[in-house]
Amino acid sequence: MKKLFGSLPFRLILGIFVGVGLGLVFTENVMKVVVTVQYVLGQLITFCVPLIVIGFIAPSITKLGANASRLLGVAVVIAYVSSIGAAFMSMGAGYALIPHLSIDSSVEGLRDLPAIVFQLDIPQVMPVMSALVLSILLGLAVTWTKSARFADLLAEFQSIVLGIVKRVIIPILPVYIPLPSATSAMRA
Image 1: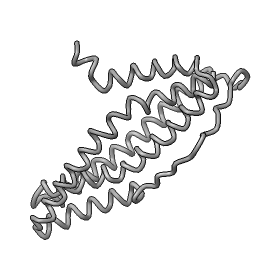
Image 2: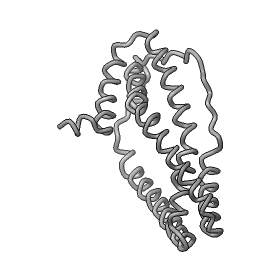
Image 3: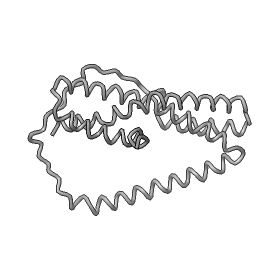
Image 4: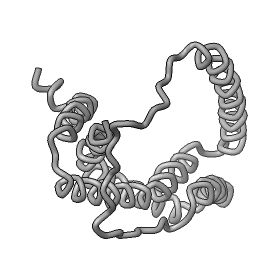
């Protein structure tokens, strides 16, 4: 039972329910703080995404060895075909389900969210697509050149990024995920 209550999915689901409950009772001044914290945490998570992409993809490609190009090509084709298939399935589900939904379009009774108290913009090091292309090319180049030193460097960078994920990203997720629930509860 302790394993269940300590798991990240349980904490996230519990956080959403707590966030909705708190959003119903919070005052506008408290919601200003909540909206600001949500913004800053979102900026921090967005900043870390390209680092996570580079930190996990490039070292993983180097570990594929001599067949990295072939395996990566097959993986990219599978990912592309599955994303196209998912797009068509979601389009079909949307056309089948959305016309039958009863969606209330009135906005009466909704409260506006308070403005962010201060904006702390933390821009990404690079766009996510650039990080993806860089990590693929870097991983392939290290494999092609058999650069053991750079492969070790990428493995160490992976350990650093894993530390960031474990000590920064995962601890703030149970706080960040419920915040939109609290702000949407305030709107109701």
